Length: 435
Image (cartoon, rainbow, N blue to C red; front, side):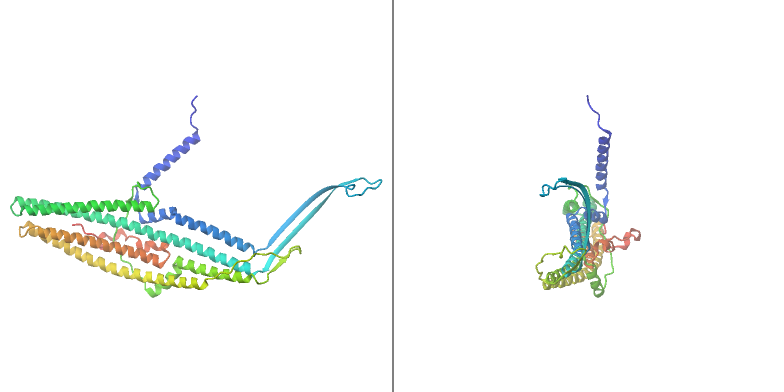
């Protein structure tokens, strides 16, 4: 007889199917930069490993602290005995050979406390500093993930804008091809003018195909970085745009950056941990004082630890990291100023190229010249669009670099990477002008 499935099994099957459908729907929803960062922070292997190292450091600190805490023990014994005196060689007339049974109880309480133990104290301080360094390294790992996720998302944003710009040039080329055909039919243009317009259209269509391939490739790279299946359908919810930010004063920003940079603070904590380990190594020659609740125990031996060297070396590494942070901070500020100027210049060039194409089109329409001027103006416009896209992308990357240089990237990235309020209007921001 065929058995019907259990209700619990059916419920689990329906739940799994619902979860699968929900995840499939989620992948088709627009992906924001914040979504990408949150997803990568949850799935990244380095973040998980770093979190595990925190647990290990906590355990090491707890074990080191145990040597400084009071130790107490209690024992309670209940004994029931019956002795055979003949075994002991005791045999007297009138006295039974077996005595008992009789019972006795034994209660013992003992305690000990390390009063002076410099080695254990410095070991505990070293483990505490190491735990702090591990926590800071964990946060620095998360900050690096934010920077990398922003970079991959930015690449896809850039590829999207490049495709849109290429498609706009195709539409312009179609209009100009039709114009060349109409002019040829009216005897105002030659056959070579028509061929030029057709060649330009084919070139622009080829550019669209290349741009679409680059865009899909960038999505594959982004999906792999986020730990998604290669076939996952990704749709970006945000577009590349220029955003002005007020850069901080370098002299004021550098001390704040050193305090906020978790990699620098982690290295400082590791340095202090090594110093404490060195003190613990030297303290093994010092006497220890332990107070015990009984005199059966002379004390506790914590073992020996080899001396730790290289303190001067870690100091030089710390100084080098500080100089590297200052260099990165200065460069990111310079890049922001430079890219903002590039965006402004490329916007002016783009406006001029658009105006030049309009004039060339009117001259060709009126039969004043052939369409060589039109094709040349189209090339100039395409070059101006590409230059502006590159300038805006470089500015966005410079803002991401500044967020990393200033530290606390996970908390502050929206300040530097967040898109401008859409209520302010697109006209207030330089962008790619579609002809």
